[in-house]
Amino acid sequence: MELTPEIKEKLDKLQEKYAAMGQDMSAYLDGLLYADFLTYWDYIHLDTLLSLQSPKTPFPDEEIFIMYHQITELYFKLSLHECEQIANHKELTAKFFTDRVKRINAYFNALVSSFEVMVNGMEREQFLKFRMSLLPASGFQSGQYRMIEICATDFIRLVDKSKREELKTASLEEQFDHIYWKFGATELASGKQTLTLKQFIHKYADQFLKLVKERQHSNFSTLYLKLEAEGQDVSQLASELRKLDLHVNVEWPLSHYKSAVRYLERDPIDIAATGGTNWQKYLPPRFQKRIFYPFLWTEQQMEEWGKGWVMDVLNKTNFT
Ligand code: HEM
Image (cartoon, protein in one colour):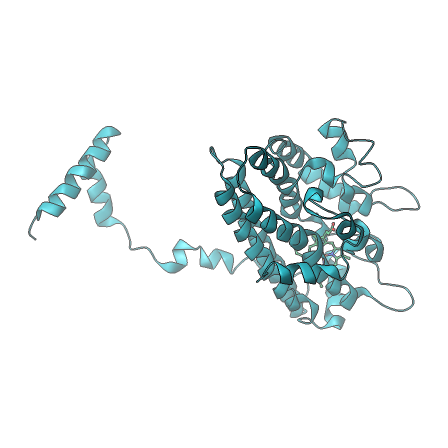
């Protein structure tokens, strides 16, 4: 083979690269010689990925249930990947922030529209049987979902609304004691935490609190207000953040709620959920009124959170 000037130049550059690290280029060339060619299946760990479905029962539809949860968790991971890049950016601009929030919106858009896989994709009879083998596990225990919330807003916004005013200046630890979802999984009559909640807190509390502290000055709310104060043009960013607020706090919860209704609603008494919440009262966004960016909405929009106006806003903002 002819050693062309281009190849020679590349070899020189490689030599420089390895020499800078005190490494011997020729040993690395040997490595190249013996290395296998990369394959698609190895690169994305396909065999591992496809081996991660282990149903607890023989009902075929349980596999759909497992896989759709896994797909959702991967989208959550993609969203958190963008949250990281925004929070850790050394010189954040409104443009970068907007582009990354757009990505998160695309992920949630896919999640909202694909929830049909749950709503009509399993036989109700099978679901009602296999779910009993899953007690007390519940999607309520999705740690990534809670981490997205922590990255998206000021932590006080995640405090139960009955305590928010009182705890405005309290420590983050004290606010964490009153995070909204702890009330969602507490038995009203006895005031006791459900096992689902206890296990969730045991696994994630430290991790959540650490993230809350890390994001105290780099959550999306704080970063938006900072860029606005610096005089950057945040109009596009505001529009993307409004979409995010609706995706995470209205659209996804509504699609999810439709699943709960389809499988668990029964006259005259609803079927108990695996996580033990009073789900009819807990899940609908109009009751929870979780709102990340109150400064981007009108009083009336917040008053009617989770009601019909949502689609109007999404259509007007050219939502795709
Ligand atoms: C047939 C499908 C589903 C049904 C019937 C269902 C039902 C429920 C119910 C009843 C709750 C309230 C907590 C409890 O008592 O267990 C809940 C919470 C939750 N589920 Fe699901 N779920 C379904 C699918 C999913 C999927 C695919 C995910 C994706 C990860 C998911 C994630 C969540 C989350 C994050 C919560 C907490 C919501 C909040 O705190 O507002 N669920 N689910």
